[in-house]
Image (cartoon, rainbow over all chains, first blue to last red):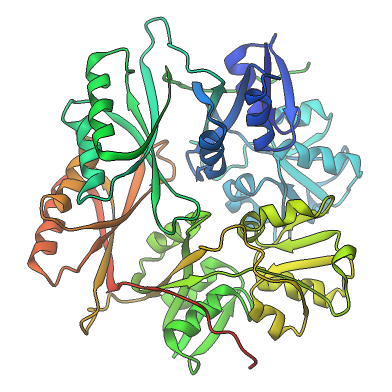
Length: 282
Length: 282
């Protein structure tokens, strides 16, 4: 089983993939998010794992757009608790650190901690683990990176400070994407996702939500994204309880399609529960 | 009249401020978005102008969060058509450009154009006009910046390519923020904004939207943001037609508050129409 993720060894996406597929899956690092979707669409990898939402920073919109463009389906979700660590080359002291490299979301999530470092420059980087790799490869003595403890282990680096995130309830939701929609088996509570745009009729969004509310189908999330090139027109991504294997949900989706202009079913999958990532030598 | 905006001369926020307040307003550049809100909250500036949404890239979430934290109100909106230009130091040729500096949103909006430049590194920067300032101050000959034509005029730089944005229908919506809520005068069509979180009851969002739909009050936008530190719980930002000076809207808001746990009125203001920014020597 080959699994694509974005980043480098020790990236949170890799930890999410290990959580979902176990340690024997073959993990294939990709430079950017579009490469993860391409690797799955081309059949080079069986699944991809991408972050979609963080409890502090909000949605990762690029991956909503890529999900739609790629025509892939959602086959699962992983909720990973995120701990951030300040990581440096061996022997570097905290007082030497003048620059901190990390992904903009990680920098934002450690804002209070970083503001205590007066005069420290925050430098955005494409990925947390790649930031660790960079300071190691360049042997930087005036810099540190913010990443997972796994990145410190993998790259054999020092940890200057642990769990520096402003808010300890910091969870990222990852989606497992696949070429085909899978009918989930077993007795786990399910979740399903759709994307749609509405007909230009009064109260359209109210009517769309009514298709679920009038049948007591709970909604987990609604996310709006502008339709590219259509000004301020929106696509809606909606996550709801259950799956169309039940008649109530099938009826809700049929009702929804009476009000939508564009509609695509994105998949049904077991609801994830927040887990601590497993770290360790490997 | 003193107006705060984020960035540097030639930034799109400055062009939006000129559009709204005219050329005689005193514009005060601030380093970061929180500084704009602080300048208005402290009384140092009368108004602030911040981007809130782009028709291609989506919402600027930080400014939704800052609007709430700062307790400021919305006093107006400006819809500005965005044109991007590739800008370099005098005499630099396109073939010399190996690095392109700009705000991540501007880089994203010119993705197709930039991908044609093989081997060109895209470097994220805090602001489009500051990126132009940087390449000028450092005299970089292997670099260009993406910014407004105004930034090229202000910094006396060369324009290597014009309107390089992937999608020509590219508009940014800016909010004018103030310390107090203003009752809009005149006959212009109005818009109002609220932010709320819902009680934990079934179909809560459906009921919230019903408060408007059942009274035929049109919604312009709904945006959800995670509540910091509450896991995947959401705050909703909602823009609707009209203002609470009309009884129908007052009733809709009273109805809404029966279903909300947290509620704040953010202001009423005239609906903006997309305009081309005015560029020129100054």
